[in-house]
Every structure is written in structure tokens, then in C-alpha cells.
Amino acid sequence: MTTHCLRPHLRLFLLCCLPLGLWQCAAHLRTVVATSLLEDMVAATNQQDDLDLVVQATPGYLLLLEGLRQGDPDNRHLLTSLARAYASYATLVEIDSPERAGPLYGRAKDCGLQALRRQKRLAPLLDLPFAQFAPIRTALNPRDLETVFWTALSWGAWIASRPDSMGAVAEVPKTILLMEWVQEQEEGYLRASPHLFLGVYHAAIPPALGGKPEQALYHFDRAQELTQGRALMVPVQKARYYARQIFDRQLYTELLTGVLAQPVDGAPELSLENAAARRLARRLLTETDAFF
Image (cartoon, rainbow, N blue to C red; front, top):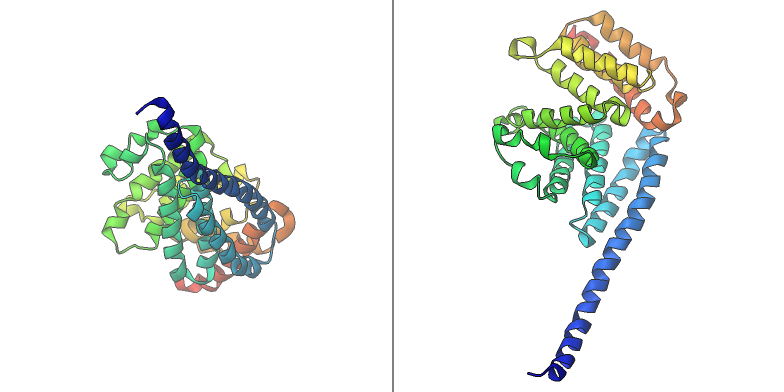
């Protein structure tokens, strides 16, 4: 067939492909524009001190993100945003409905892992046993930090919601390795959250089973130092895990009553988190006699 004869066929092929290319471009552009708007929504939400309002409004936000994923399923930024949204929502839901939080953390974990799997250098390592998984530390780079953080956080919380699953518990070392990597990269990330996560981990395990209360205390105190005492969830989790683990009733009550004595709006960007911390502190105080 001559070049002249090929031209009509080539033109037809290009015309057929053009709508697909435009659709893919439009889907990506829609995601970029929408996620930019959603970032502003996240910033505004963090300044809300009405916890119930945010809990009621978040499902609509999650469905919007899921809709965007339908049109752009391989977008790592979008998958990371979903992991963050599901994990953040689960954290709020867990205060009053712990049984609902586990599946939400599971969705967050799945989104985070999907985002990591979009990286060819990481994908082959994620499902391997820990010994073969561990080299992922050298394969990660600073651009992965946000995705790694939300994946590790939600993965660890999901495991905590399934204490009777030996398969889930066996994955704990992977989450710790990932969060320790985040801490090494930026220990103050998201209000020292890596330290808070590691503090909970070391305090939640009884010393007889390998827990390290002194290591937990270091992480909690370092988080307190890095946040300058403005993040009220730090003393709440220190009371919930460390004070209970060492059976220190006085420390437990002092930390929780101290949180309730502080204003929610002391740091506007922490209003939502601090409102959640105060609600959790009230609940934990009602449980004092059950633990001491």
C-alpha cells in the first residue's frame, strides 16, 4: 500500500484516538483543579471546632474523592488524598464508634498502598515478607513522604483494630519501619505525628512482650516539645497509652484534666484536632476507675 493510500487510514486512526486523548486529559485536569480546591477545604476544616459538623460533612467529601478516582484511577496524589481523608475521618469516628473506624482505616491503607504501588521501584517490595520488604527504606525518597506517612498510619491503625488476626499483627514491623523512615526524614511532620505514632506503639505493648515504656516516653515528650504544647492529642495519647501502661493514675488524670483546661482555639489551625482531643479526654476520664 502506498504512502498516499495510507493517509486516509492514518487520519481515521488519529480521529478515533483524539476523543480518548481529550477525555484522559480532561479527567486529569478535572482532578488537578478539584484536588486544589479540596486542599483549601482541608485547611478550612482543620479550623473548625464543631466536631459533629465535620463528622457529618466528611462522607460527602469522601464520595467526591471517590468520584474523582473513577476518572483518574492511577493518580498518586489523589490516592494519597483518599488515604489521608479516610484515616482522618476514622480518627474522628473512633472516639465515639470504635467499631466503625476499623474498616475506614482499612480503606485508607488500601489507598495508600495503591499509591505506593504506582512507583515501579516500590511495587515489588510491598507484599514481601518483612526480611525482603526492609530494603524499601533505601528505595524511598523524600517525595514519597506524604504517601508513606498516611499509609503507615492507617496500616498501623487497621492492625490495631484487628488484634485477633495473626496475619494482620505480623505486618506491624512493616508499619514501624515506614514510620521510622518518615521520622528520619522530618520528625516534626504534621505536628510531630511520627513521634506520636511511635510513642503509642512502644507504650501499647506490655514490657513482658517487648514493649518499651521508656522509648514511648521519649517519643511523647519529643512530640510535646516539637509542637510547643499546642497539639492536645499528644498528652491525651500519652495518658491513654503510657500512663496506663505504667499504672500511674495521677499522671493519667493530670494529663487529661490539663487538656480540658486548655482552650480549643488556642491554635486556630489545630481547632479540629484539639476539639477531638478534648472529647477523647472526657471519655478517658470516665474510664479512670476501670483501669486503676
